[in-house]
Length: 360
Image 1 (cartoon, rainbow, N blue to C red):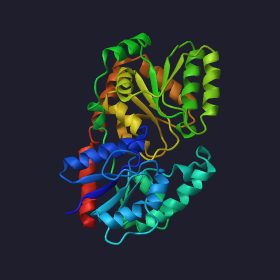
Image 2 (tube, helix red, strand yellow):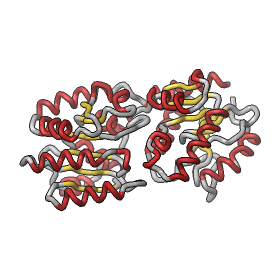
Image 3 (tube, rainbow, N blue to C red):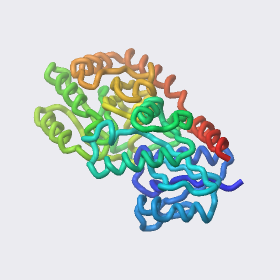
Image 4 (cartoon, one colour):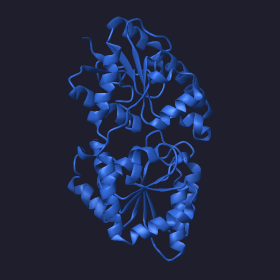
């Protein structure tokens, strides 16, 4: 049986949500006994692309590699990046994470939006099996594209990777201690992306501040398309004396050590195809608040409290209640861990491998 060719075009790049999915699913698939080769990474793996762009390699070079090497199948994991034509004898599997460029067009560039729409439409045609990371994503695909629903399958992410992250070193612990985050504080983690709705958190914390309850908000995440408006709002509330601390991107050992210390994790996104950060916080036993939109209620279930994405008063009241009650935080921490225990990369790999078997 020939090897599975696995899309690794994000392998040697800064790790994003899809990059983490790539690494964790590859690791878990290999643990099932499959031979899964990494194709298209910049430098590593069995078929590196070198200096060629991801798009250039996928459209211009990958078809010839597939024809020459004849793997048992090719699995593209980045929403739409399959060759435009099928390769004789090599079935295609595609993972679709979300439809953000189509559902929230203002959050991406016009160029990327058109690339996404056209290439995804074609990829859905040529793929024999399509993995959707949530039922929310599956429904979005069916609503917007003409595709056979029988080839769409929901396979959730795992979240147990947070337990394999190396513990922080002495320097990291000292740095975290130096932040002075002693009383229960609030953490948001994710890009400063327009759809993430960080403004809701800023305004809720500001409302508590104006009412005499001083709360520290920590932001962990990099700038993103459309982050200018969020940064302007951030400057405004900080100028008013609200304690908001943007820390930017943090390496995994630092990030997860920081997350474990949070009193409350908040993720008020207006749309997610899956929503990994709140599930990570839940796995680590952090009381978590999410929005009522996208896949977040589906994924987090009763393990997280929910607020509407424009409900400043509701979020402020919930934060005030949790931050002043250790018993309430403990109760929600237990609910969070119980829910997150249902999501493992081993299970994701098992379901994915069963789809591979159906194509062989």
